Length: 137
Image 1 (cartoon, rainbow, N blue to C red):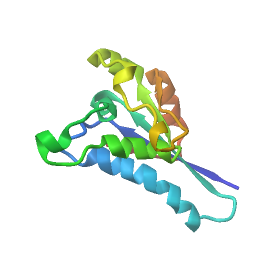
Image 2 (cartoon, rainbow, N blue to C red; image 1 turned 90 degrees about the vertical axis):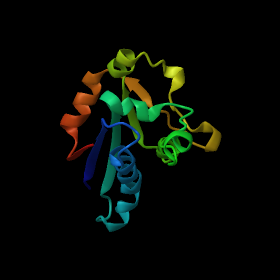
Image 3 (cartoon, rainbow, N blue to C red; image 1 turned 45 degrees about the vertical axis):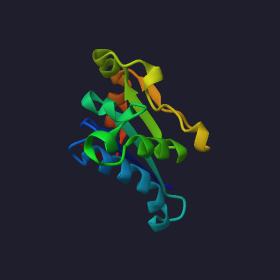
């Protein structure tokens, strides 16, 4: 029985590029890959927001109003609904003056039971060193 650990490090802005949305889509869809694995094998994705990527986690995004596209906020909530391990870099939040209450940290209102964790970069670094496959975007 093997577990494939997948790391998705999102460091790009939420708008003007599809990079962060695509990384989150891949993390969410990685849950379906288990049907192609050998019996007992698992996939364990983790999503880490660092640098400008922490802006993807803000509540109340108005992407439709400003850019004419849907918000990544709901995408982030869906990842929590699916129990993905989500980590947000504390130092990058502090650098930008973003308080925890301004973030999408849970999806309880749509049935999610997993919460995102605000962690120091050192924890994210440990995750990056421990995964089998790593995607930076």
